Every structure is written in C-alpha cells, then in structure tokens.
Length: 409
Image 1 (cartoon, one colour):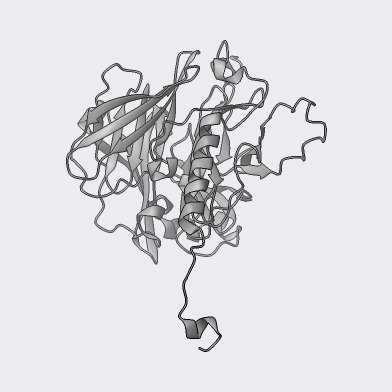
Image 2: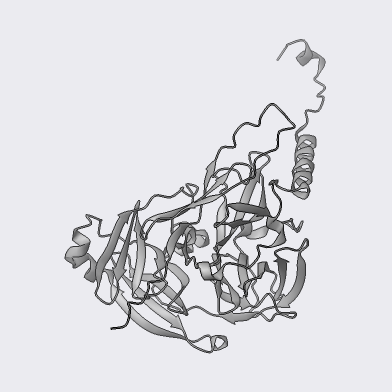
C-alpha cells in the first residue's frame, strides 16, 4: 500500500500585521542596540496567522493608514509596506523584506518617487533559490498607455526603471487590488479594469493584459472601487489563476467561479461553477453556524481545492464547498482591523504556502546587518517633509487695526 500523500502546508496570513511598541532604549548609549526581530504566529486555517513587527519597523494601524503585508513567498520571505506618519494628515511609505525563518528584517532603499496607490501595486517574485525581486507597476491614467516598472533586486542598492506600454490604455486612475505571483510572472489586479502581467526579471518585459469575466448583475461595492475586493477576487488555486465573484440580487446572490485557460495571453476564462447562496443557506451546516442569511464578503480560495471558497460575515470566517453546497469550516476570525472606512475582504488576507524546500541557499546581503534602521534616505526624507510642514504652518505676524489692538471689537 503506497504511503499517504503529505498535505501541503498553508496558512491564512493576515494582511495587516500586529505592531508592538518599541522598548525604551538603555540609558547607556554605548550599549549595543538589540537586533530587530519579527515573528509569525502560525495557526491552522481557517484561523488567521499574524505577522508581528516592532514599532521601529512601522507605525501601528490607525484610522487612516496601516502597515500591509503586500506579498508572502513560499520561501518564507514577506514583503511589508510600512508606514511612518510625520503629520496628522501625511504619511511616508517604505518597503521591507521580512524573513519569517530567522526573524530578520531588511529595509529596502526608497526610489524617491511618490508612492502612488499606497504601495498596493508592489509584488515579490522569486527566481530559483537566490534571486528575489520587488516590482512596482505604475500605469498612467492619461490615456497614453504608458507604464513605469520599478524593479529592486534583493541584495542590490538601487531601483531600476523600465518604461513599458499597455493596452487598452486607462483614462482614469488605476485601482490596484493587489499583486499575485504565478507562473514566473507578477499579475497586477485592478478588479474594475483587468489584469496586467509581466516577468520583471526580463530585460525588456512586455505587459500582458487579461480582461476579467463580465456579469450583467454585478453587486456594487458599498464604498466604491476601494472595496471591490468584497465581492470579487483573483487568486491561485490548483495551479491556475481563478476569479470568483458574488453577484445577482442582494436577496438571492450567487457565487461563480472561472479559471484562466491556457495560453494566458488569449484572456479566455472558462466557467467552472455557479452556486446560489440560497442553497447554502438552506443546508443544515449553515444553520448550525447561526450566521445571518446575508451577502457574505469574499476572503480567499483554497490553494489546492478550488471548490472550497472562504467567506467573511462580521467577525466570522467560513468555507463553503461549492460542489456540495454546504459549510465545511467555520471559526471566529481575529486579526488587526483595517481603518473604519474599509471593509475586511480578500484584500486583507493572503494564502501563504510556506515551503522550507524553497528557502534560499543564502539570504540576500541586505539581511546581513545586525541592527535595523529605517535607513538614512528615509530619515532625510522625513526631516525634509517635517521642515516643509513647519514652514507652511509657521505663525506669521499679524498687524491689527489700532482699535483692535486696544481691545475694542
């Protein structure tokens, strides 16, 4: 009898990390500052696994900004978009690589361009066991079809800019929902436009456009494009890119799944399954959860079984087997909350298939520093912004009329 096949390890990684306050520094300034460390509290799905970082890496989430795990690679490397507010209405974003196995953090130098899309357009791609690249795509919105690809290879010290073209061109802002690594490429997702994909390691990358499936009865997100991930998501499952969408009448929604056919440039999606939520609500497995019969929010697709889709309702997460039309997993879901103007959705959770066999032979040289800092370039930028803010808000002498100066109003 053959031995049982080992199940692939995976976890649901929360997109917002937990931030711990930094311990006060010792009075002895000569005392060596302890090395910065991060950790990941791993939990079995459907519970959340949470990245924990110190305050010196990023500020804590607040009502406006929040640090965000932009990508989770099977090698154990995580791409973190950190925040550092310098006024009540302004914030500086920066990227960091976190190694879950060693707890090390490496600050990535800034490229000194405005971090548009709040860093939601950055992805992490691994080639082999040594090369890691952070790539940020910036499509223009002037109808020209131009885009800039900013690439940073881990272990080097500068960003490389590559000018690309894409079609159809956008004449409105790009609403990045996230970046997926699949089949040796990065796939930038805008749920209201489609997918742009390329291999950033290529000397001359070519952007591939893949339109998303269209339905006539789309459910409008309650907060506009910023919350489209509530009812639509694109994830990798069973080796394919899949698109799942909740649509139809709000009182009788349906869930539909498509898979991207080969070759990807053709942009053909084949329909896999459509399930009425009423069938799920009527099953005893759903009644046992005591959840309301309301439209849920999409969370993710099981990475190996595309028939299993996870949903959120309030603070609960549950998995539905679309083939059986029943709930197969259910739990309370605890993770750091997004700002109040955003709803928890597929944007705030990642499937993380942590595979030790993908560990790099040697960590990139940026991890070799014993002590962590946000980097001199970021410090200079913060000081420059603070100085500009002080100049713009500095009190100016005001000359009052003589009557007013005597107190006659």
